[in-house]
Length: 246
Length: 41
Image 1 (cartoon, rainbow over the protein chains, first blue to last red):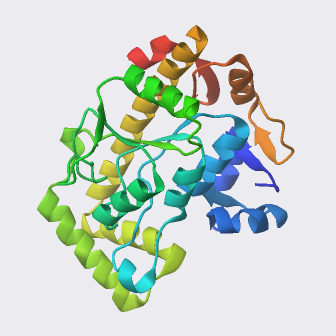
Image 2: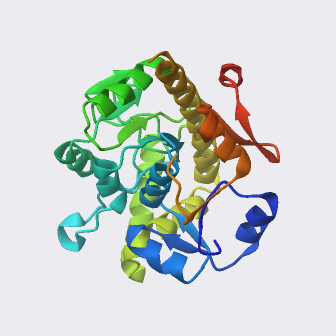
């Protein structure tokens, strides 16, 4: 906004942002152009990680990260979020990768890049709209303090990458696996039929899924973000306490 | 904290970062540095 990266918005800025019908989706490749032209832009996980790193913020919260898209064999569509997780030292709290993605390949990619993925009170990867999936995790933590210690260990190891905390959507808001998988399949098919690709694919799919679930997916999305905000705040607090002792 | 002309950090956020506060939440209408007790809610 106004040629700057805004870390926090005033009420007026927030209103300007919310009322504008012309807010660009800003991934890393778009960052210089959007700032140079002083356009309004909303950051992806990748660009938010980068901005947090510039500002000295160590933990940030989002809904779900991007990843390897379904049909990767043909499109080579892999979110820049994964590359940023591989090279930027910020902890990201999310409810898993968005379920519209190819989750097994997303996990393979993160493993290849050496990004630690920690399940918060879970042994399996949450799948954004659902609290579980059949993908087993290597790391689990049951308290914010455990995660804070991992963040410090990663810094001492000078790994330079991010740490991904996957925090399941609360069970009461988790959607039925079969129901949401069917809806996602329908939305992916609609995207293919309408020729939607590239940066437009995720907003299109999320919008289609909201329509096809009559708003249930949007409610789940909001609730998982609230839950991530709480856990992210607890991790940040634990990290500050650990660092204060050193 | 690294100074960078391209960043525009809200004053409450900047104060929290400089003080090493753990958490800044966009709660109500104000950004407020929060104490650990907040997270117990």
